[in-house]
Image 1 (cartoon, one colour):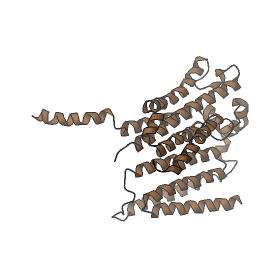
Image 2: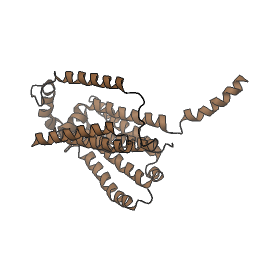
Image 3: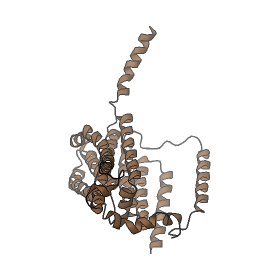
Image 4: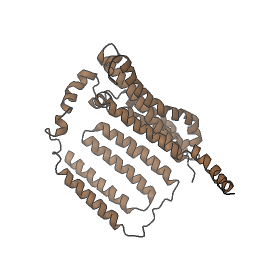
Length: 191
Length: 138
């Protein structure tokens, strides 16, 4: 049963992916990329990664779609037809994809209990998390307690992203106000 | 979107639910799926929906730029502050055991406060990014 749902989801993912490449109407592309994220979120649920699925649904299908729609209001709603044939990008993508698939050959099988990831600290976390932190959700215990440093780093990354967007895009920055002054100074300096 | 009556009514009905669900995910992260990141995004999405339907001016009145910008930094400061607090109480940085008399209660408190910091920063960043993008003119 799960296998049938897996196959159905993967087929739909492929169909949506191909449709995104083929379509020139950017509004449809934005909507389809939201659907793609929702399908990915469903796949994560099937893989028992509920926390990741939650994030994918909220960020990928929700916020990204809204932000891309916001960008659409600033640009045209149809993609330009490229003049040159995209041969170099095609070669790059095929080679990179082939390398990635080659890389998966060395990965342990899905759900392999002897995989390095399941033998290092994970058994200790699973055995001790509820007892040591009192949090029934082991994901939260690992994220906030055992790996508190990493999470602090992640929050700092989000903080930096927000500040960066503010500095670059908010129109009232110091840089923008100075520009006309500098242009005014130039002729004066030359004279 | 002034003339879209259905959108406005549906948005008014759903926004309180979205915000409440965000708070649930925030404070229920110990027990079920979710936590600060997801809660922040959901909470931010509620505000963004409000901005989409009722306009950016109204969103600015609910969430002024000064407030959202302050909250971006506040969340990180709360997270880092918990680490400082645990150091002052004699533990390692971000070691929540020392935050309360009993290590379990300390861990619970630490995780709750840290996740709150994450949620505040994420929600504020989401709203800020949306407002800066949507507020740009062509």
